[in-house]
Length: 111
Image 1: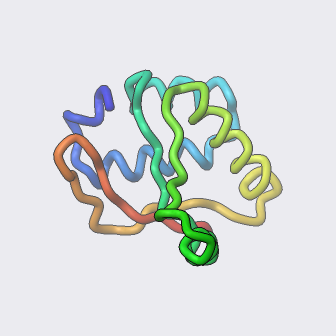
Image 2: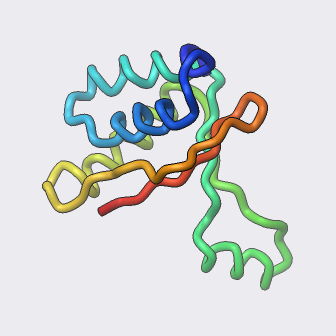
């Protein structure tokens, strides 16, 4: 995180989710660079189905993670195109974001 250290965890969550709803690739790029350092990480808990399959075939808990501006830009672009651009969905943060050392944990939803 870069500027995220000076904002509340909830403010970060709201700004972060705003990136995923942003139509302009240039604005998304700017927002990503404002919120993350180049080595910033995006980590998701995989869907339960993926976790169950991994355990069933002998793998440890799978991780969905990416690192860096370019990887995050690509992920956000794809999600925007798949879910938001057509006007069918929008992303929004859930309340109760919290800071865990140098990470921010929060939930969000697609509605």
